Amino acid sequence: MNDRDFSVLDYLTMPIHREGWPFVALFAAVAALLALLWAPLGWLGLLATLWCAFFFRDPDRVTPIADDLVISPADGTVCFAGIAPAPPELGLGDEERVKISVFMSVFNVHVNRMPVDGVVEHIAYSPGRFLNASLDKASEENERMGLRLRLADGRGLGVVQVAGLVARRIKCDAREGDSFRAGERYGLIRFGSRVDVWLPQGVAAQVVIGQTMIAGETVLAQLTGDASARAGEVR
Image (cartoon, rainbow, N blue to C red; front, side):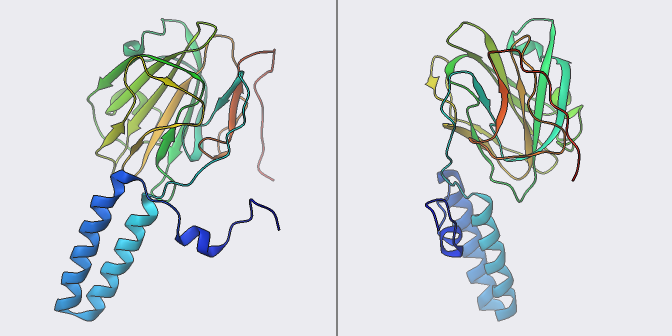
């Protein structure tokens, strides 16, 4: 057994993000009222409360430390990895660049983490629709909160929180001028959504569609060197 072994007790006692406590308390209060009305309803309310706590869990992550790595900002599944124009509100220019999208289901951890070391140069909120976040057009049509990060070498990288079909609240704790390290928490999206990463020009994706991501741990790309885009297959 090593320090990374994970027990059931560890899972049950996992920290809950501060944004989740009001919801957990509300679910618990409703469960108590239901129990007073009819005991079986109370048990259903308890299950709903446990699910709410599960949704807002906020585990620590072990982030690889290297200046040239781009780390996944979200748990979930890669639903897009290819070339696309960056959102105009980010101010990253008109040239197309590699975009990686990570879709979070209601079962994933929803705390978002910074993909790189950098300074928040610009923040842009865009109102919009609440389409299924796994659709490609969600990046353009859904409500979103975008950050343009300035790397140490002056290049720009974009990271965008996108609301989804069920998600109705994007929480972003970053402010313009803030400095972050890769893997640090900066926000969350409630109840299913996605996060898009727009890599600097000339940087290739090191993940493929369908691959499972762990926020703060999985490497999306390498900023230096001449690494080419990866391929993958189900095995």
